[in-house]
View (cartoon, rainbow, N blue to C red):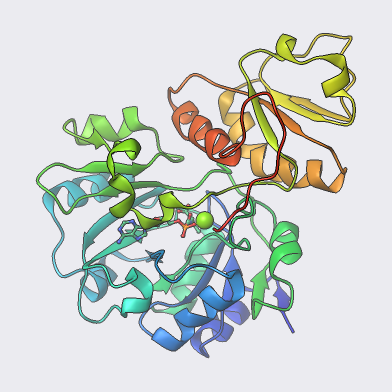
Length: 329
Ligand code: TXA
Ligand code: MG
């Protein structure tokens, strides 16, 4: 049975008892467990059906907790945290021995993040321990941006769900590896590359095609996918009326009038598109659409992360044909 509660203190009590608890952050909902207890963390992998080789982000509310999980804090990590924590960035640092292998998938490093969301902070304070948490979806599904989306995926699988708190960004945190001589962006996210480079100008972007998947294991799995195939378009004018029938459209440009989609949303900004993307993937599925056409966006600001999620959601599917892809994470 899953406990649904509005009380951060009640949710934290479940976590302190070794349970798994879904909680809101400013990016997406996370599914947390006590990061220093391997058995509690195992519950996250069970609930999500997550592959064991995909490490988790450890959530903290207080800079003093860093010493519990990090063996050392590189200068670039310190600078990023000074400027952006609490906020939507995760930094990868050398891990301390107190962190179980379960959390880091056996890596010698650990990702840490200080959520800025007020409810998340109250919850983490009440937990009083570092909280390991991936996004609170079943593996491979879009990250949840409402507690109802968490319920759809994890009812009966998570021990508790904290049901208050609005998501601000809708796309996960930006992940930066700070363990090497130069910091590396492993996952584009809610904090833009441009903002990060103001603080660490030498930040390099990992080249996915060149084996960087080994550095961020999660990136090798197909992600964020709704059930309906996602098809990318540069402009809605590329879509035929026959294809639009029983399909959804999401994008910045309004589609031509002759296209009668079952479900159509246009956004005023890339930020608004990003915030609603995962929720609308789920709504499109609920509406039973045959395909979801998504307009691509320029890779600037939040657009870099949004473009990344769109490409991954569409992964394994050619641009103009539908087909079913298998998903693993
Ligand atoms: O916004 C977020 O980041 C959300 C909220 C809940 O904090 N969390 C989230 O977690 O998106 P998850 O597990 O869905 O994604 C974490 C990503 C994965 O791609 C994982 O492989 C990578 O971070 N990661 C975690 N620890 C790592 C490490 N030590 N080295 C390299 N990559 C790591
Ligand atoms: Mg995830």
